[in-house]
Length: 305
Ligand SMILES: [Zn+2]
Image (cartoon, rainbow, N blue to C red; front, side, top):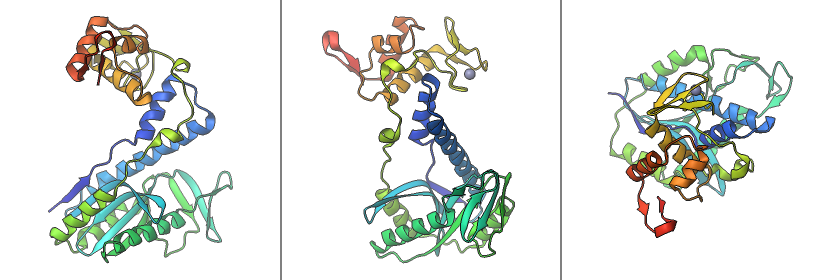
């Protein structure tokens, strides 16, 4: 008897890319704020995952789903399938004071309106329902906002708000544990159907424009993303946070970063040498590439894939 995470959450590619760019390039304030809000959102979702992992009832959990339905795209933070109900969770890691006035949501410190999370939740619910109806699935959907940040306060919230606040996460888990949890093949099929409808996000078009020549070259610390690292014979050590890693692992990561930021660039020892700002011995770079990638042998124009 336990929850089964059918689709595990991983760091969104957009967050990874912005994190890499950020250490090599000055992001605009707007993009930087966007990045920070994405990181925060991801942390909130992970927080809910760790809560759900403690459930004792049978359930299937799918994290971070992206669907296209009725010519529109919608994202679902977490779906929990129980025997009779599909729980739809929209996670908000808001911090600080907010209030609701005439149905609209505002940040108290600035008085500025924010995107109404209830509307967002309803939209997801409607689109999910339509996706399920297309398959003749008529299970009950219960949508909830889940606020994960203990530093969040919402004033003037209506009593019937479909939400769990940080202090209510315990009672949320109790509610889920009380939910009937006899799962069978049809629940597995439903999970597989949802997985088959999941589309892969392509965040590249949303990134700020960047060119190889504009980015700082070097090796980033995996822990704090500083480019301030020192390389000795076997290890790469961060001068900012002290994190140390074997050179082979840093080289591999540096190659992966290059490929993520520039999918069209060919991986060669020369390319990694330049990208890492000549921090490593060429032969070591060559060995790392050989051990982790496939050599496409084209004589002088050989590269690794
Ligand atoms: Zn560091």
